[in-house]
Image (cartoon, rainbow, N blue to C red):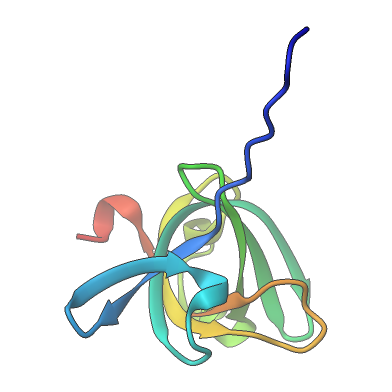
Length: 116
């Protein structure tokens, strides 16, 4: 008889400035309005309600969502947020009523190789 073990999917985490330095915590545990950053690959994008919603996947397989205003998207090169692009997103942790998960309200997008 074989037993199957279920492994939980990793939680989508973001880094933020804590009292003792940078800390990484699942996005759903970060206080709304906290400045955060995350490195991920863009796996989907759709335009809705004056924004581009980006689907993200981190190296450990966790998935999350980011919202980028159309005004910001017009101010940065379009290939920066193409599908498959690995980026560092900097923004604000947000929760909206009716969304199944919190998201990042993007303020800046940086290619990973340019991020440091």
